[in-house]
Image (cartoon, rainbow, N blue to C red):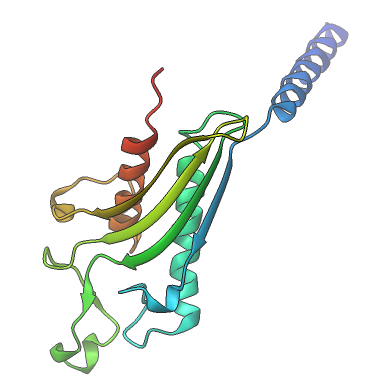
Length: 173
């Protein structure tokens, strides 16, 4: 009985290994995200001081979100190139509220998330499938339910990007 269970377990592992190897041989989608002159972005600040380090941390999170989310919409072998030319995060800093609010991002409907980007989607054969320039904004962002946790300070900005990816690259299945 133990031998039979051991044999079944080994066969299961072998089958999983074959499935993994088959999956590994398929070309995976490639997503490249570039931020063009981020020092000129309208608002990609982590705090009211607009440090380069804070901006880089925010942009790294947005890049990671774009890459992981876009992968859901591409087929194996496709390549997506995104050049982000401007970012204006949801909310803003209101230093006039006093020194305790210098580093508190106030989220109001007058501060919607915005982004401007250019993209090219290339097929597995290297030919352009689609391309364009998009100016994204979500004026009703405070009324939009987002699946991202409320503890994520970039949830409105990430949802703006997710919504664009869903609309732009929706696969017909």
